[in-house]
Structures are given as C-alpha cells and as structure tokens.
Image (cartoon, rainbow, N blue to C red):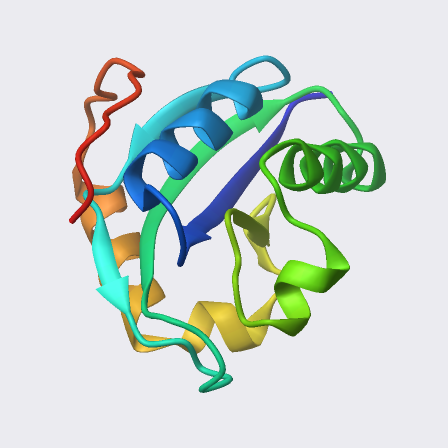
Length: 138
C-alpha cells in the first residue's frame, strides 16, 4: 500500500539550506517526493535557539507510518541532531510528519502559521524542483 505524507523540515544552525537539502536527499531514498515548498524562516517557538529555515514536502512511500517515522529519526541523527544539540537550542535538522494519508498527525505543527503558508505554497506548486545541495545560507 502506498501512503502519502506531508513533512516539515527545518534547521536552525550551520548551513540551514544545505542541512535541509541533505535531509530531502535522504528522504528521497525511501519515498517519492512529489512537491516541495519554497524556503521560509520562522522563529524558534521554544525561544532557546536561532530562527529556523523551513521547507514542506509531500511524498509517497510504501513504508508503514511507524517504519517511516523510525527512518526519519535516523536521518535526523545522520544530519547531526543529538540530545545535546537539542538541549542547547541547536537543531541541524528537524523532520516532522505533519499529515499522513490525509490525517493531521501533528496538530501543533499543522496549525503553526509558517507551516500553513508553506503547506499552501507546496499545494499549489505542482512541479518538483531537482534535488540539490546549496552552500548559500539565508
């Protein structure tokens, strides 16, 4: 069975755009990416860290929700996310499953203003830009 997920990917340290691009490349190994929003900044809701750069993607996968979430958590660790960095307010990469098969699974993320704007932009962006790693920080 194929599942459709909408993910929010963010980073608030180092080269944020490159961190997000690398996460998307990892996700593309387990899912088919159909849509990507532009990048958008948001404040760190905890107040502990720097502002985030975010992007929303829609993808499809044959993995179960649990297995998909496990793989995404592993990708976060590969991208440099650790308990110590999180405690310091530094998030090299954060990948959240917000919608799974048309069900909102993370209402807090879904209702966040920055996510709603990115989600709307992703929904109207029917093309999927080529995946790349960019070394330019916003």
